Length: 259
Image (cartoon, rainbow, N blue to C red; front, top):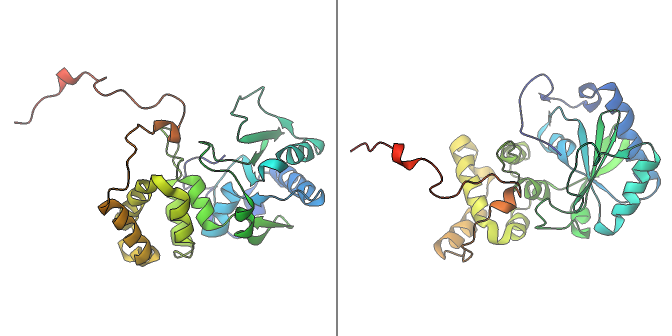
């Protein structure tokens, strides 16, 4: 899975992915992808390659993310294990309910069938909305820009945030994504989109038209109707690990009044 976007030698505007990969990545990423194609296991490219496809930026990463239908996960896992990947759980435990992480020579290949916070499963609609591309010579399908934004919306953690990725997807596509679909997917979590739009407008005021007026109006209507009845704290949707302090847990007696 991808981490925070960082600009540097390995994060460049490029149209040649092979130039950005380590030799072992050039060897082992295609082995897994080509095996999935050969064994006719449907999958979508996401993660760093999806970001590259829609933004032109390649982020240095040790892994590749592919999406599969939940019913195809065991077949996909068997395919990449057959070409030499092993489960990295023993050396780095992870939540096996939504992802399988294969590793070979430090190269990580992630198979995903559900969002990390279990808010959505990969279904056939994701495949219907995907677009064709080529990954190191192999024909692939890339997750749609709206679905990629949906995947990244909840990656807002203490040590990691994918919102810069979403902003770059909007700019890279000039807003050419299915906004109605994104709003439907987000559902009761629409306030995240409100926050995202506010940040985008502050950051890129001249590019406000990339986010259509109809989408803005829909969010404003939700805000006007206060269509958010759930008052429970949602910290687990961002990260199930402890990260949000309790109200009043700090040393409030040290706060000095400005009056």
